[in-house]
Length: 401
Ligand SMILES: *Cc1c(COP(=O)(O)O)cnc(C)c1O
Image (cartoon, rainbow, N blue to C red):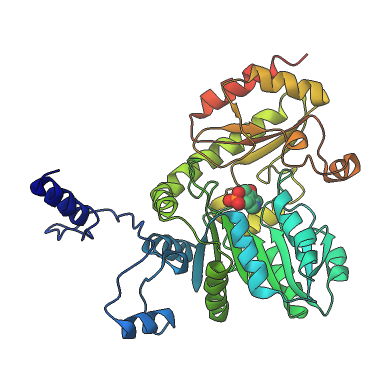
């Protein structure tokens, strides 16, 4: 090898890893950038120390905080009129942060029996392993919920709108109950979003949402939101998020911020569609029952009317086919323009079959008590035209014999 070849190789070795600085732009970009940096350059030890101890704001290490999470958190806090918000790696990590920030060994949690399956597992079996006891109760029954509370109760956990039968939690009443016992009320507001319900304003202490669902709205992100009013919990939540490794990805936060821009448009369309679809399903001879809080016959319709904003009731509609599992299979096969996706909250209409997916872990008795059967279908209504969703549903319903 010649000397000059050697030199050019060593030159490349120095050029390639040289740190790249953001260009100085005479016109600022109209949308925020993505900040994938895992680490930031400090001016010196004094600045590093001041930032790491929380005395001055700024970023050092992505797991402790990054601009994309903070921009998204700020927008979400504003929507919920919250004092603070943190963005986590998923809805489940937001629940983990909430539990770890508020409960100690020896404490007790009261958990709504209709909670999301993984939430129930976290707040019962996993909490038990950490020495935190749990009581599962029907939180739409105030007397039963009151009886479940103890002097050790630190947290009462409910969902604004439950899955799949869409019961509505009485947030002011549950907040009052929690506070009587010096406990906090944590509300999973995933099925509502701040546009339908703002639980903090109704007395809740903490709100969580799976941003993976309709907040992002495009089925391409995993993120969670936890927000609240008590600022001492903010510091605790940020520490736990970093220590337990529950931090979010900058790219996902950036995508979710983009999704959030159209949330009001997407939601209004989806909710108007859902209300019309629910009414239409009530007319079908093969449908035994329809659950939608916007229907006058829904058991919590009056509560939903007082608690929800803009007289809208969510985008999830659940219905039960008279013909049971066989009918559900025929419907799902024939309604093939509606994707069978065991998740929810996106621009296209999707359906799920709770008995074989989200609620498969429950015994037949438990399923029956919650009202879930083989014929139960959960629709997550999207933003298509109402005519096309009704036609796609009709295609499935007419094939049931
Ligand atoms: C999806 C979901 C969660 C969990 O959120 P992930 O982002 O999937 O971790 C929690 N609660 C409800 C109501 C959900 O629908």
